[in-house]
Image (cartoon, rainbow, N blue to C red; front, side):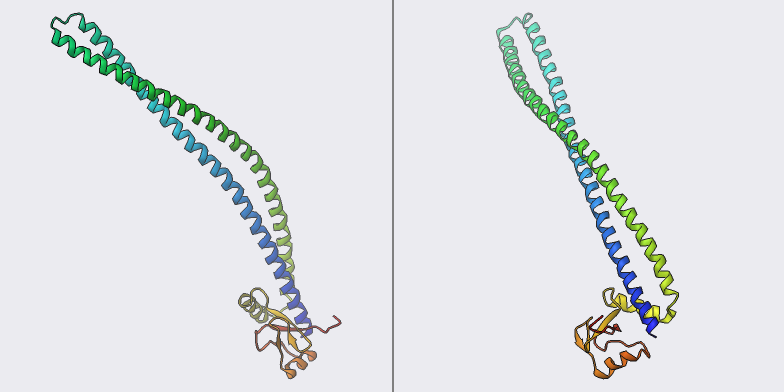
Length: 237
């Protein structure tokens, strides 16, 4: 029975080691995701600025077309004025030309605004693209480094899994099943040290008769409070 308890203790050690390695691996994978998310966010920023820039350029193009059309209308109206014979018609065409010129001035002001906006967006886009390129370069290096760590940890996990399989072979299947259930119920700790009459797992005092029975190694004993399998450890150990 003592040998089985020693194997169970070794099994718990290797399982906890695997848990720890997987937790570290998970943290590294989360860091990799964070790096990739940073790059994705930078790409989205670039796409937003590109979209705004395309919109302003389209608006500028539309204003330029309207501006050209108004100038053409003014030219045509001025040509027509030469053929007008009545004062009333002359005045009406004059008002149309004045209104058209006002429209042209307004359009030109809007065009200047659009050009200014386009210049600002162009500069912003260049900055964000430069930042994205820097992030991509740095993230590639960081991701590669994290992946190397993950791969190294995976090799350690694989080795521990092999070791676990070897340990399990020496333990009855029913006891392994019992151990596994306890591990799931007790946050990964199926065994608890019994020392000086106490269960170290839950810090509760053990019945004296139960504690004394641990010295005999006749059967698997469990803590009546936390149900963990007890492993006797004397103070000098």
